[in-house]
Amino acid sequence: MKKIGIVTSGGDCGGLNAVIKGAALAAISRKSLCYVIPNGYAGLYNLENFNSLVELNLERLVSLEAGIAGSEAGHSRVKIKNINDPEKYNKIKTGMKKFGLDGLVISGGDDTGSVIVDLTEQGIKCVHAPKTMDLDLMTYSVGGDSTVSRIATIVRDLKTTGRTHNRIVVVEVFGRYAGHTAFRGGVAAETDAILIPEIAADFDIIYEHMKEKFFARLRSSDVTAGTYSIIVAEGLKDANGSEIFDETSKADSFGHKKLAGAGKYVCQQLTKRLKADSEVKELMNEAGLFVEGLYETPEIRSVVPGHLVRSGQTSAFDVNFGIEAGAAATNLLMDGQVGVTVASVDGKTVKYMKTVDAIKQRFVDLDLVTFHEQLGITFGREVKKCKLKYECLTEMPVRHL
Image (cartoon, rainbow, N blue to C red; front, side, top):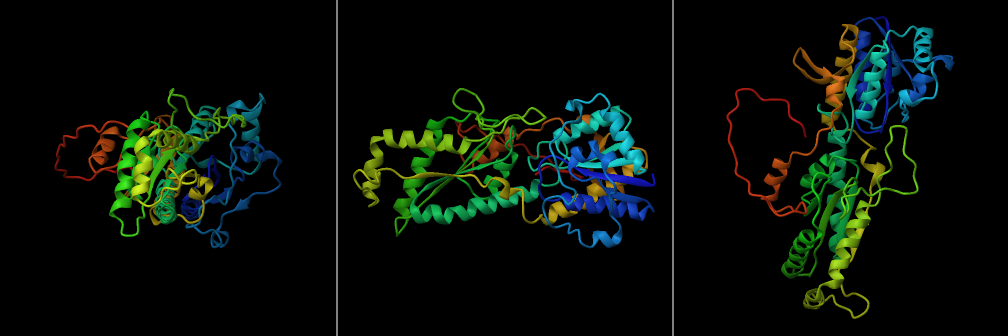
């Protein structure tokens, strides 16, 4: 292959620029040319209308910082199969032929990967560099470590304002149907409660845990200061088992509605229980906080950091993985392996999976949840017994976050 195109798609996050840089450097090392196809699948569909493409030569790569989050190539949420144009695949092929592109390195998550499967079936040569901050692909995906680190920092920082005002702080984070970012971010931030889509939350259990921990902290503090932190994944289900949607938004081209309101819902559930609990006024009075009619129960606040967890800087781990994944994807493409997803680079061995298998959704390991429950975190359920097993390894497997 003499010329390849790079596409990034889906949500932005840390590590994408590292993928782009790795892919381009690998192409250059093999005496090939590498070009940015801007704005995701929308740009790929409209490729034939472009007058020129930016070549990622060594000079252009100087200004592309692998450690900056976001994507120099730009994104869009477009499912090619759903475009109302019977010539859509031929249009893409015409655009690629116009610029002499022999194949594509595409970085994105499960939705992006489903389009890669589609394009490959249509004879368009693609390799997938996995990217999703949700961490729900079968492979590790660039962006996960960066996002978890930012979530942990935000939750830790919010403990200072929580303790100042004696508040319970609820932080709602991305993750859609899998709770990896809430789980790992919560553990890293030493959060008191972690609520994820994989576990139906029992708010009576959460409330009792919160009440005990919060008022114990007030009692043990010489200045009567305490806080309690909860991290909740946006895909949390309500008491009826239904997801909490933003009813004002339309579904995107992949059929996903905007999930919004989980943090607010948690606040409502716990506030209702605080107000109904006759012991709370007495506990507030013991702490010197009770004011009739004005300050009778602790305040619960919801914070939604939103796209802040996607932005800013890329973690060192994601820079490393991104460069390796991008370079591996280029090499796979040039050596004739298409319709596949990079899993890892192990020395001189590039490990990969069929993309159709890699994009199957991976959920939080509930056995690992049980492990952390023994350490005092509540997941909104009765604590399960944890009988450990032990295994001596002779080789270390690749592990997920």
